[in-house]
Each structure stands twice: as structure tokens, then as C-alpha cells.
Length: 141
Image 1 (cartoon, helix red, strand yellow):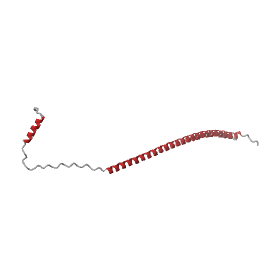
Image 2 (cartoon, rainbow, N blue to C red):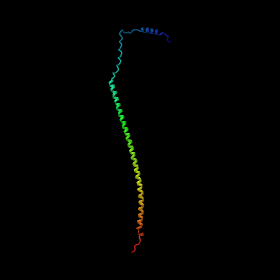
Image 3 (cartoon, rainbow, N blue to C red):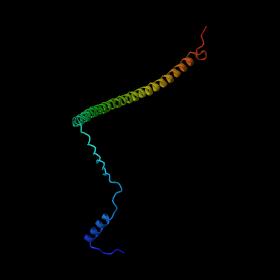
Image 4 (spheres, one colour):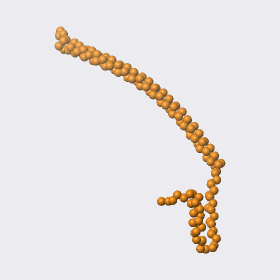
């Protein structure tokens, strides 16, 4: 275990120990290398940095303008598509109405044709029975 020695005595003992070290064998002066020179910080190119910031902000402004233009064009395209859809839906409704009317006329024409065929069959029967040799009176001769 260490003995508790006051601090000032520790330093005195340490200095005595240092003095007790043998001196250097050579008498040549010790050369101390110069302290390395701290590298100088790079020079800031403030005008270039400012120009880069201005170019970037201009590019952002142009992109924002382009975005706005594309958004407007998209809205116009959406409005045009909606208008086209309404127009096409109206055309489909008109075409459906015309189709229904045409089908109704076709049904009426078919009914008339069936009725005409019935009358034609009756007329044929009347002609064939009325003008047949069996139904003719005998000629007097």
C-alpha cells in the first residue's frame, strides 16, 4: 500500500529523482524538430458558392413553373375528358333511343307483314276456289 504523502512532498521527491538521472552521454546539443505547420484552411470561394446557390434557386423556380404549367394542363385535360364523356353518354342515349324506335318499327312492320301474308293466303284461297273447274257452272252448249 502507498503511504499517504502530502502533495508538495511528492513533487519534491519527483524533482530529486529527475536530478538523479545520469546526464546524456554526448555533449552535442539536442536539436528539436520544428513543430509541424498546421495546414491552412482552404480558402472559401464565396462568389462561386453564391453563384451555385443562385443557379440552384433558378432551377427550382423553373421546375416550380413547369410543375404549375403541367398541373394546369392536367386540369384542362381532365375537364376536356369529362366533357367528352358527357357528350359520348348523350350520343349513346340518343343511339339507344333510335335503336328502340327502330326495333319498334321493325316489330310493327313484322306484324303488318304477317297480316299481309294472312290476307294474301285468303285471297289465294278465294281465287283458287272461285275459279276452279269444279266451282264453274257448266256451260250450255
